[in-house]
Image 1 (cartoon, one colour):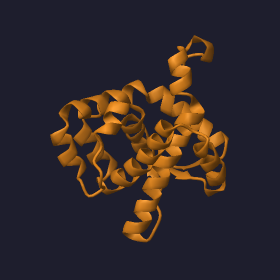
Image 2: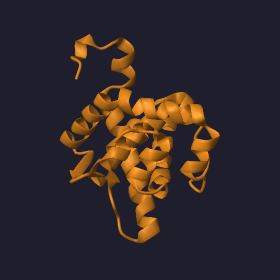
Image 3: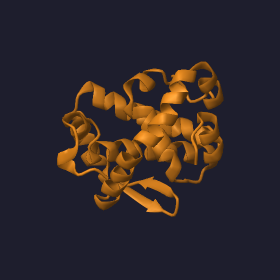
Image 4: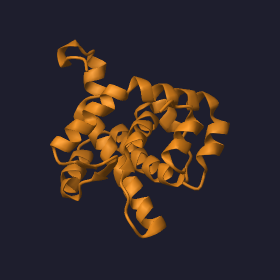
Length: 171
């Protein structure tokens, strides 16, 4: 992990641990919501999908290409968006340290709980997150809305190895 003072201003502002932890919280929340709706039992976001989800939502161009409904299969989206597929796979690698730092920050500040290889969003922090979002820009709110969507979408996309294979991500 790069020392804070060695990071560029853009990196400090756009990829800071608190912001990314809130994005992962939304990913986990979306995944949790969808898994509960599909199976009546809640399962947490698989750890590897936190990295994939972050790659989808933290890059604006990819975020703009996401489908509008969770019924669009990941395989169809990958077929229709080969350049974005490549960007997501590369983003998983590029954002690895950023997401790790966000996971640590989220766990330390009670946003996320990590159980084995799964992440669960903390309901106790919902009010604070909503307060933060009300004071945020439209772009930040859109990013978090899309993070929630991506969490739901990834829940429907299949097992983590299938998702990674479709995106060309090496496990």
